[in-house]
Length: 429
Image 1 (cartoon, one colour):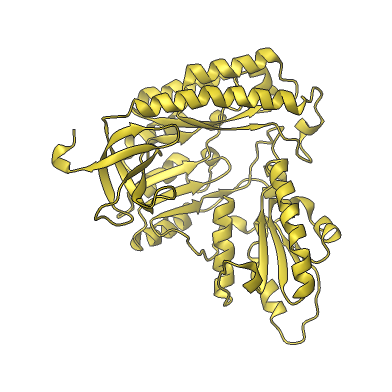
Image 2 (cartoon, one colour; image 1 turned 90 degrees about the horizontal axis):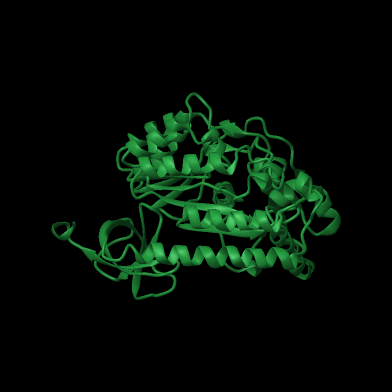
């Protein structure tokens, strides 16, 4: 989501005559697009911001802007902590960059601090220009904000309440992408399952499935409490919707899930999980886990480890609980020591690594379709792509182009990726 926000920032600025440079020393404008989902990200931002202070002294005409969730959360406090910052804007106010840079380009303009963190009621109806980083794959926002108020999460405070884009706007954007050779889109929303405009989320998927030239549709993130039978059916029936879902569990303990205000029990989660598995053969499921939530006992932790073994996710993102401002979990009793959280996280990752490695090895000798994404980042002699189930596959370089769809035989399953070889349609089984 933040990456796509950066594409919008670049789109707005390109319209004003700016272009991206790789070295800050060559920039007229330096923008920090920030995340505040965990404390570590916030610390990293302030560290990077501090490094730019001396550079601003040497080149006072350089403008510094701070966007994203920390900007929304901290607001004018950023000016107090870093008075050399010129502009602070939240995720709802990316469009304000246009007036900011226009004003500062006027002859004789005097430096004034600019703050844009107000609620934007027109957010879902305003389509900003986007500077796409990848022509083959694209992120497309379908909704903004979140209404769930999970007790650990700062997103409703940083990104506001839910607002869904009109489906016609989304369809038009994706048709244009498809006309420009885009093969895969990932629909973005804090909880795509609660998309509500002139249609619901399954209805939107049906509209997008009819777009010619588009090969694959993905989406993130799904909230388990809003995973409907209609959505499961749509995933099973629509040929362009990929066989992968990211379905955050967060904990295997129903008691902890209640403290998290997740809106479901573990029993309700696994019922939906196995319905997905049953109705969508070959489905890949990934998830999120929080280690060391306040009040989590050793038994609660063991229930999470048991859940990992029972569900066998294809992969997870797991993190230690991080106290965030404004959230209820930051003030809950039973805050756990860092050592305990680290130990529990290690055990979670150890179990999941074994599961992921085993599941990947089980794919050896099977045939899968991949979308070629280009040269592998880890091995310049190989190409990389992803299966419909969102698994990374590396293959030897061959006469094929980025964006091609290939069938590959999986020759080696590794912990975080697969190795494969291209096969002809005739040899496909």
